[in-house]
Every structure is written in C-alpha cells, then in structure tokens.
Image (cartoon, rainbow, N blue to C red; front, top):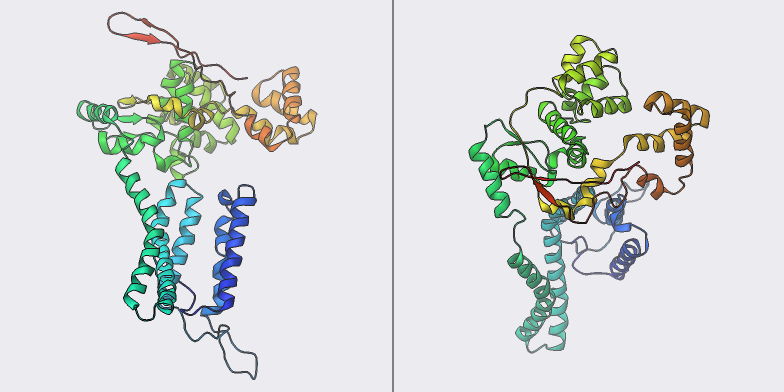
Length: 421
C-alpha cells in the first residue's frame, strides 16, 4: 500500500528483508509474538517508509529533493497511513487483552485486499505478455489464481461462522431471567468476571465484577470467596463486595474497606491482612477487632460500612464450566499474600531484619520466621519465585464427593478443598 505502482529492486529487497525479520522474531525469539515489544517491532516499516513520503530540508546550496526518486507514487497514501496507525494501535491494545484482536479485522482486511489487488495486477500484466491476443483470457486467468488464494480462508471463515454457538446457554439464560423477574431491582449478582456482562444484559441487575474490573482487586476477592474454606468467610467476602467492594487501584477504590484502611495509615500489606480478617467476623467481632488495633469509633463505623452493611439481595451464580477453568481463577483466590510479601520483600533483606519483620508483621515465632526465610532464600529461578505464592496444582480434588440429605429437598455437598501452607 505504501510502495509505488512500479516496484524497483530495492522494494523487493525491503519486503524480503522485513519478512525474514518477522520470521526470525516470531519463530526463533522466545515469546516473540507475545512480547510487549512486538508492536514496536511492527513499527519498523514506518521508519523505513518515512523517506519515501517526506521531503527533508536540503543541505546548504543544494536543491530540495525527495529521498525516493520514483516518479510513480502509490495512490491513497492518506488511507495507507490511517490503516498503518490503526493496525499498530490495535497491536498495542492486543497486548492488554487478547479479545482486542477484533480491532485488527478492518485494517488487516483492507491491507489484504490491497495485496490481492496488487498481485492481480502483476499476474494480469504477466498473462497479457504470454497471451497478447487474448486479453480477456489473461484477465480471467489472473482472477482465478487470486481466487485460489482467497477462497480457502473465506470458506474457513464461513464454516467457523456456521459452526459457532453462543457461550451463554439455556441454563444461564433461564437462571438470569429468574433473577430478573423475582429479585429486587437493586439486587447484586456475583459470578466470575467472564459472565458479568451477561448478568447486566439478561438479569438487568448490578454485578460485582465484569471485564471492566480486571485491573482491580475485585477478581481476587470473588475467586477467594469461591475457594474459601468456610461458608462464613465466603459470605463475608460477598457482603463486602456488595457493601463497598475493592476497586483499588481505581479512584473509586477509596470507597472500599481496603482503601479506607490504607487512608488511615496502614500500608498495603497491613490493609489487606486486616480486610482478610474482617470478612471472617460478624459485626460485633469486627468492631472488637478494629478497636483492639486502635481505630476510633468514627473510623470503625466508616470501615464497617464497607464490610458489614445491610446489603441488598446478593446472588452467587456459578457454572460447572469453572471446573475447566481452574487455572484461570483458583490462583487468584488462593494467592497467598504472606508468601508474596516474602518473595518481594523478605528475601531481599538480611536474615536478622527479615526475621524480625516477619515476626512483627505476621505474628510468626522466631523459629517459624527463620524457616520461612530459609525457604524463600532457596528460590532461585523466576518460575519458582512466581509460583511460590500460588496454591499447589491439586488444590481442587478431582474425585467424586458424596452429598447428604439435610432434610426435605435440601442437600449438603462438602467441597473438601486441599489447603496450602
């Protein structure tokens, strides 16, 4: 799209050289296509094309000239630049979330069409040279060759569209419809973030988390409610999410208990630890907890309004699909803040300072703190450091666990999740 209609040898060399660079980057460089530097690498053609489009000030005494002397310039240069900037911007967004690959559709489609048109023109010229007395036949042959290249991907796209079915099924639709028809308008539905927008559309109710909350603490708390070892803790987390939530680090995070605790002088570790303790307690126990740590009556009331309010109706909706996505949400919920602190802070301190800090911060004995310090200091590789705060692979059991009758039509099913250190 950038090159002139009549290519010179340097244009072919440039295309072949860039193709070789892309092949090297995507095939031989570890994590090449998934590296955040990939959009910068893709911007290389811009730098190579700049001399082709701009006139630079000439040296003193010399007339102005273009770096590229090719008289035939490519048509539609403005559109070419728009599409190139669009493509690179989509590449940057793609590294924020894979679903943004949809932004590539328009610029990639137009660029592919331009490439097909250019190839058709070349083939038509070649065919006319071979069949000078049959120009129509030459044009048809060129079109057939291009069709052979275009039909397979178009057919695969058609087959994918015909075979696609929505992720939301009748069970989800009926469940969310029942909530819409039988719940109060201010009800809150908690589910994993994948389904948050379904709740807004089908149930027409607020949700604790959706795709817009991915960069906040909310997904962690939702996952923590799902893996909590007791019903009281799960209920406490769901209540906290309904009362004040935890949208940190967004500005509205200041309205949640974590933000309020941090605003009263606690560092992030202390604020998280306090909040994790508060959600396990009833209101009276939470008041005693905060009073024992020196919070004023006004401060206690402000914090408890975000953890122990009288919430609206709260619905928890889960799906069996979550059992096939444990790698996506279980690490979020079972993430161990203490271990994470040891990796990021304790292992970087001298032993005496680290042990004293662990004793004062988490209440470990000297022996326990020393053992933890030795374990974290033994971690060497990046993979070991990153996996240390995560739960063991067998966190959720795979065997069947029987349910028992609780009287009437109710059944009690024990989850029996394995704990971590």
